[in-house]
Image 1 (tube, rainbow, N blue to C red):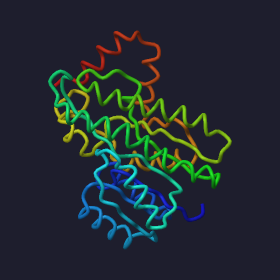
Image 2: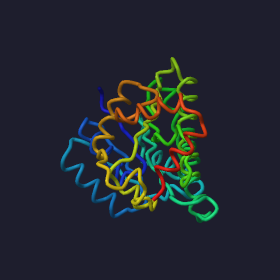
Image 3: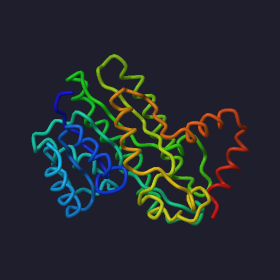
Image 4: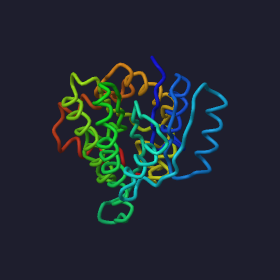
Length: 259
């Protein structure tokens, strides 16, 4: 594959950081986006020293309005072409909808849905002009289920899956592909940030690493897979919900997400 430039959001930790290593290892130049300039500089220096990759970084809070426009503007001013867009940034929140903080939920909707969609809107036209490009949207197996105790998060990931599948269909024959990566619970900072370390679905479980998820996601992106579900048990869980009454699915997820 010829040298290409990949933009990765949420690149300072977890699956996003793992993606940065995987793409750099495979010869891609990088544009890393996250909030902390200090973290991004350290990661950028490490990747540049370890791999034959040019690494740029943009310190931006992607949960604020017009964040996508800021990233697009700064990327354009640097004269960089984005060949692959990895919409990885996102977060969750654990607890009852009636009791959770609205500001945090509003930021979640903004980051998980609005910024992802806007970045895609901004970078897609040039890909279509070049008749070449790839977009990877990070969803979750949560995309396939209702999520009691994480109602808004599950709903945002359902949007990502639906949007990605529809866009993939629209782009058939254009040279641009869309992959929606759907991992299950992963060993990362996500659980702590969401406050769900004590839920049954997490506590005491051996979870796949961010590196394993990123390597799988990269391979499926390169193949042009539309919906990529990581892990055999996750695939079985997603398949089984198609055959299960919805009221049973709701009860099951509520049980798994209880403390």
